[in-house]
Length: 432
Ligand code: GAL
Image 1 (cartoon, rainbow, N blue to C red):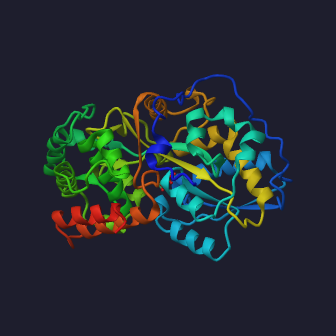
Image 2 (cartoon, rainbow, N blue to C red):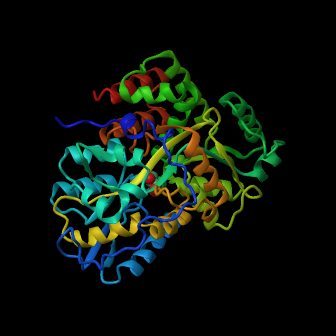
């Protein structure tokens, strides 16, 4: 019988694992493939499907492509990126292509429930032989490999680990509002006091963008109010979506949304981050791909921006991992193999993650190669409680996320009230 891996199964136990990145000697980072591909088949090119189409995300992809070009000069990289943060446009297009038997040679997917969707649909090949060939079974922490394994098979190779519960702030805006830019906010209530002050100063208190960024904000509020176990219980059925603690979290979410920019629905995440960079907004909640945007803009923490866990979520790491696949029917499986070798190599993971704001999945990366923020993420990942991101495919299947996103959009555009929102979310989570 096929085991259905839930978000909990994918991530539970990661905190207790040896995922702490240590500066030990490297495993297999010396690619041997010349692109001819023991996966068999055409290695002349590889179409790589992502949503890293512009700005700092494209710079991350470019860093990976550079290493790919050095390791596999005979395989042509074809960029199949589709714009739209969090795959907001890419995932639908990908589904259309998969159903038309026209898959890219490899695509970006999130480890966890989202990946399980593709596995259940029979759209992915087992790549566990490549784990042996490239030495990945030892290069990745055992708990991670165990949790990527479904019925003895592994269907993707992770390139990085991101944290979704980060609050970014503009020191200049906070100072202008009479706030200490170095202050830590332990609770949402502490944060509301600061948000009121920024609002009174005439700036946007909290910048946000289109629906998926609002869902990203929502998940962090659910984590803050329900705690790690309560939040994780939303996805395994042990927390009641109709409960009063969820009502409280949604009330806090509604309040947070009242501090946000009204043009939000026409923006994507880089626009909301830019408002922090430009000193137009005080706070922003976003995954740590935002770190790459601050760096791209030449900004330095803590002078130009600050970061801390979203208030109420300290000690919890809201996890997601980008992972690459070999789709059934890929036209250039040799090219896919070459790509998977590069993204899993020590050199590929270091180059990519330095540019992307994330941390490597490999356990032999050197923390000192990474930014100050990333070093805090590395430390947190090693000791925090890990929960799975909703907005980024770790916690719930794509259909559930889509239904939650629709309910959230309805609520934040004023088409439903809080009681209806809670009912809609409960129905979405129950698949109704
Ligand atoms: C996430 C993805 C990240 C980053 C982000 C914003 O879903 O895992 O790598 O791309 O979306 O687009």
